[in-house]
Length: 212
Image (cartoon, rainbow, N blue to C red; front, top):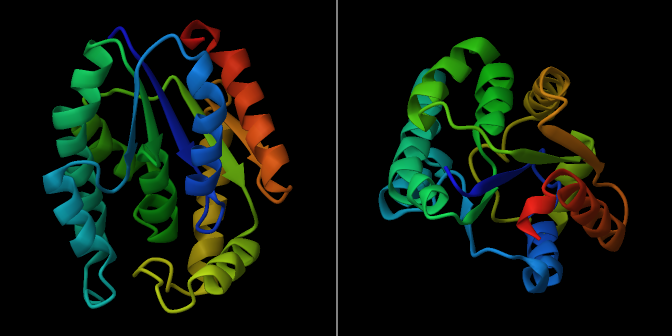
């Protein structure tokens, strides 16, 4: 693979999409390579269809294992159709969530086991991992309040889960972060947006100077 791969992670309400948009506005003029952005679940026609199934609040009867497998299926299609071709073409791939989300949400939040969920995702991703992951760290209580304030009537199926679930997800992220200190860099997402963005850019510049 000639390209580079960056993923952004964090609990619901961490502000990933907003932060990523501002980061791209600032670093795009400096980049020495083309880039693409993708989101998970989703990022391709088939993957977006799976996303709709996963996040639809009407699908309250979904089994936890089914949920984990659907995330992996969406991810597998995204890898085959978008990510791997882009990396082979020497592009920078920036993803809003990746495997770490499944490890935290399904592995820890659904109590399916981080190791077990990683196994099905290793199969889905062909063993490909990001070169760098930025984790936007925020307490679940704060993140959920942000969501309720910004879009009180538009929560997806996972966002509607009780606080206890989101606390378990957060604990799962802490385990994953601790196990991958070289790849995952933690940023305090409770700071003002400008500071969060500048901290993220600094991490990218320090860890992937090759892309500039």
